[in-house]
Image (cartoon, rainbow, N blue to C red; front, side):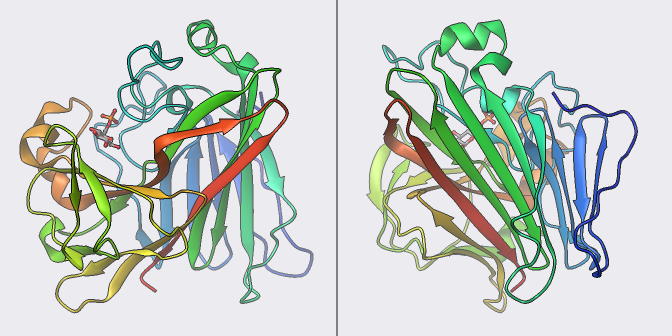
Length: 316
Ligand SMILES: O=P(O)(O)OC[C@H]1O[C@@H](O)[C@H](O)[C@@H](O)[C@@H]1O
């Protein structure tokens, strides 16, 4: 495990103003010379902050546990290898809801040199995190006995945040998994946003005994508890969270190899019922748009790997 009690600074680029990376109390933070920053807790490799345009872009509950005692409520928890409550009589059945990735301690693998600049000539910083079978708690190792390696890459540019996961099967037997980037977007007012590019798509409504529907709205308003799994989307078509007032995009989310998107807001009662969600009214300040592969299972053969991810742009 990479551990450091003292902040360390690592520069990127020779002549350009430097990006910095620091590691403190199991939190890796990076910032660009232009002011954008990102923070990732090694617990869950959970991105807990992304600042761009001078503003925090991710919602983090005031009551979130940041001490590794519970998955972090907010930011971008990573769901793997099962989404939601595991099905019965399945290899994932012994696992907790949303699997083990968000409640395991990851290691910081360092900054990648591959992405020193984005296509506007601005700097970018890419941070890699790793989790493997041997790093899991004994409980999780027993519950999911596969030899695997995860590399989670978080790339910050001036205009975007990218999160990308590589899953490797390092064992001798095939395994299957689901994956989801459970992104809590920070918004000023849930009644003032719309979610676009879901029209005509099939979704499962988890608030209504998991029934299947077709989306009719070109710009979805969130007016109550919402927990929908939109299926088989084209990952290159961005999901847009826009301002209802002037239709300006607030966020756009494109995906790679992640064909499903969950839209979740707990609304009043569910928000009150979650001990780590606060304040109660904060359901108004978040919308989860979660890129994933969750309606079926991805199978990886022994020795193979899979890769998928999302790119979020804010206030385009
Ligand atoms: O409370 P958790 O385990 O973080 O899950 C939060 C929500 O996560 C969403 O992805 C699920 O669709 C919801 O059903 C669930 O309630």
